[in-house]
Amino acid sequence: MLSYNFNWSVIWTEPYGGWMLQGIWTTISLGFISWCIALTLGIIIGTMRITPWKPIRFLATAYTEFFRDIPLLVQLFFWYFAAPSILPGFIERFLYRELPNFEFWVVVVGLSLYTSSRVAEQVRAGMQSIPTDQYYAALSTGFTHLQTYRYIIIPLAVRIMIPPLTTECLTVFKNTSLAMTVGVLETTFMSQQIEAYTFRGIEATTAASLAYMVITLMVVLIMGLIEKRLAVPGLITRRR
Amino acid sequence: MGAFDWTVIIKNMPFFMKGLLTTFELALVAISGGLFFGMLVGMARLSHIKLIYYPATIFVNFFRSLPLLLVIFWFYFLVPIIAGRPLGDFVSASVAFVVFEAAYFAEIVRAGIQSISKGQEQAAYSTGFTYAQTMRYIILPQAMRNMVPSLITQTVVVFQDTSLAYVIGLKEFLRSASIVDAREMKSLEIYAFIGLVYFIFCFVMSRFSKKLEAKRGAAK
Figure 1 (cartoon, chains in turn yellow, cyan):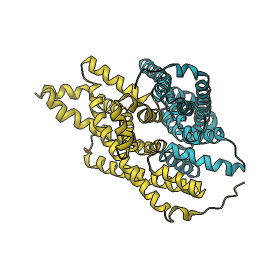
Figure 2 (figure 1 turned 180 degrees about the horizontal axis):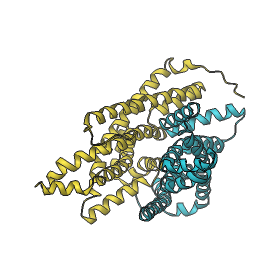
Figure 3 (figure 1 turned 30 degrees about the vertical axis):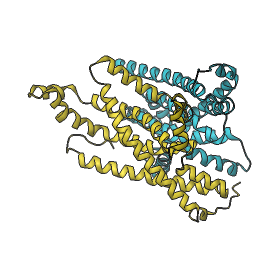
């Protein structure tokens, strides 16, 4: 039972401490870039899902179902190992040999497509949660269709969407850990590399866990600030 | 480039099926274990006793702030130390999944219990039921019915998550695919195939969940 001698110094001694910091930086940039792309794509797809035109709605629904129902890891492997082989030979060679950080960009593509389908679901749910009365009321005061969306529906929907989108944003940062499987040097990868060099698995994994917790906490704080700034008094009470 | 060679799938089908079976086993353990402990933790999260409420809340928030991949590594290192001897990939993956998914199931259970009106609980107490009886006969049966759609959604998530056991070398569906790929060099066909298999299972399940939800909405 529990015969393990802890040696916490592996976390900060050189070169391991530097590896860890580099890994954390990669995690943050990976998560941030993917989140920005996913948010943009997700808003577009989510809006497409509630348009009155059936073909567009069908396309958007197919998109979300497709990316949601395949595990992210399988998608990453597909983009990394399989997708480049469909492309013409010279592009494939460029991707594998010349593009610096090919792994990084593969994960950005995979992660943002996967996340965009989840964001789209939240956007659709947020838009649909606005009662149609609001819409009719706006039209009856003489607003055009566009104005109704611009001044009434979207401002309301955005505020409803923030809490679920916070959760999605956290998920993105947690999902960046999967990038280690294709060889991106992010936090989890670095922690396992430290383990490989020092056999200090528990210490290294603890350090990585702390890093993720701090990142998670930062995201929650930032999103909380945004939510507070945007809050309209008396309109939407936070679920607590 | 060139023509696709789908024979690689058929040739290695028994191997894939073995991997898929492991995936199902792991998912089954993760879902049943996660649901069981999730139910306990979910109830603990609603306790008035601080000594029960706080540990449960810390447990849930802790595991929800960590990536599953890290939790898998955690237990990969921890389980042999606690047990005193190596127990194999499947056991440590199972422990990791049960603990991790318990945190997520707990939140579903909590929301389910909270969806039952307070009056039900008070009525049960006033007829002389104890806490355990109230939960067992009044609250949980009703709450379960409300939880079913979210539980199925979470089941799909767990099923997808089992692919992460890949990292510790467990020969589940994705790992078996990557083993075959290393030998046959047919990435496109192999990953398209396993993507499709995952898709079919998850799609059917999520459709089922939507149907149930619609039915429940109509019944109300």
